[in-house]
Length: 188
Figure 1 (cartoon, rainbow, N blue to C red):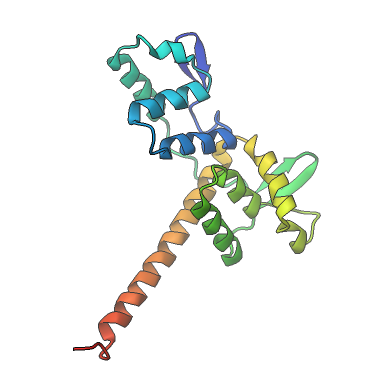
Figure 2 (spheres, rainbow, N blue to C red):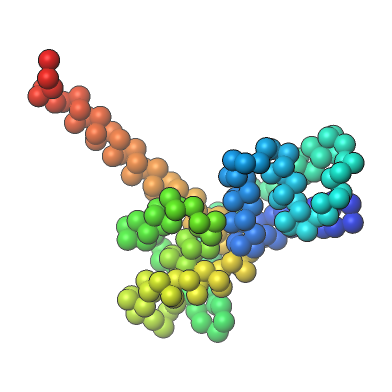
């Protein structure tokens, strides 16, 4: 926990919920806020008093940001099974193409709930069929459940999805470049 005046706010992936993680990322991406405003908004969202920043010196503010950022390395161990509301949810060993496509679409839409929806796609309830796993209402239900979970669950999956999507993007770009370079049908 990070202490700002009289308030303690969560700041590690073990303390932040996935819902909080999503909100922090939304604030960070807000182009209408400058960097100082973004940090104030993040800290206030997590429980700091807005008034605490009125007379705060820049050095103290920078120290808070450094403490926020000075975290141990992100967890790499995947949690593959979670029990929520009396049901077991499991993630497969590897994220399949169908799930990657759905996740990529979620990330492009930038709804502010991308992390929760990513896990809602990856984790499947063990007592349901494949069709039920992908039902929009079920995914929304799982999103609500995952928003309350600690974000350390999320980090290994986000890393895996990002790495896989980067590989696919690079391969497509290389293929397009090779195709263009090999073409002799270009007008002169």
